[in-house]
Amino acid sequence: MTENVTVSDRALRRIGEILGNEPAGTMLRVSVEGGGCSGFQYKFDMERAKADDDLVIARDGAVVLIDPVSVGFMAGSEIDFVEDLIGASFKVKNPQAKASCGCGTSFAL
Image (tube, helix red, strand yellow):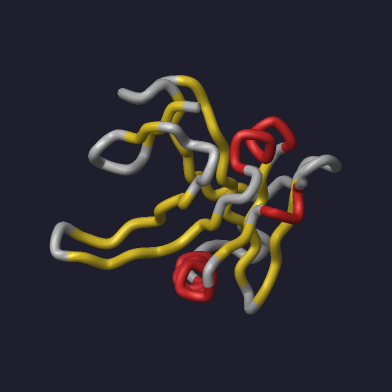
């Protein structure tokens, strides 16, 4: 199940750019927490510590960490980076989400 979380090439490029401006060893942590207008929300943090049970997605200078609980909520998801008229942001395309809010950062299962 853990291998089903993917990161698009666009997102990897952007993560690599962001991490390139951070101290060496910095990684992007993606997690799911309670809250948001639809029940759960995605959280993106810079982190320098990796837990033994983290899912690690590393390619092209980008390193993404996802904890095991969040992986369960994100199975089958793709982390993407989109640019549109209202701005640029990371988006998680989650097939498990039954509903999401207009801003795209919270979801319900």
